[in-house]
Image (cartoon, rainbow, N blue to C red; front, side, top):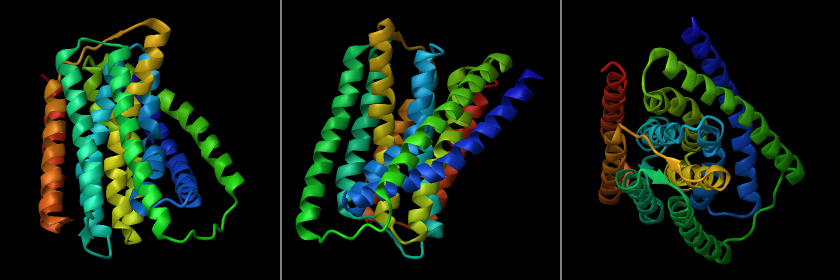
Length: 322
């Protein structure tokens, strides 16, 4: 009975996150236009941060409220898999034009994503306790990414005229802030009930995080990217998928870890399913080479990506029964 109640609350909170996420994503995207950002930069920053907000909130609540930072790691790993395999694959089928990725996204966003996945794997393999060192390394990685983003934005502004903004910027900021508050409440309940469900079913909370929580928190990412793909904004859709993963790993783990370390000291990491992070790192390299060779995705390649995700998802579910 407890499991049924937890699943019901998880389902309701997942829908609420999706509902609020649409308003949040729209406001964030408008703010990106207000600051006159190129499409790939807006996708990698404002769109990525807005759609990744549920993941960072899960990591915050997991470590600060529930003392289970591995839940945040599992959620972000699962979301990263979803973002890099499912979202581009779906975008291939809904885009009205060929899913062609520019070199800027490949050599900037994809490379930083490989760096982020590699640092996450390395930290999990080498350190059993995460404190200031890991937190600062992750945040420094995102600072380096923002530095490159800023250079690209400056170059874009020099060569493109600023467009007139047709919306109320104060209203968009209010929606942006209000959405964060409501999403925070929903994410807290989602995290709480997911941990309770894992305890009720006597399975690792990492498994629940990788499957249920990651799926719920990845919905805003999917909404943003698919909406952009339908409009033919392929660069937005792709950079959002990569940018979300970079933000999730570097800030979604780095910031909660920094706060937790300040409050209660280093956090002990109990992450028994290291194969999840190994697979995440391998998939990041595979996607880089796939984009680098073809600079586009075909429907055949999209089907392979969907199959790869389904197989690994099934493997993670299998882990809950052994």
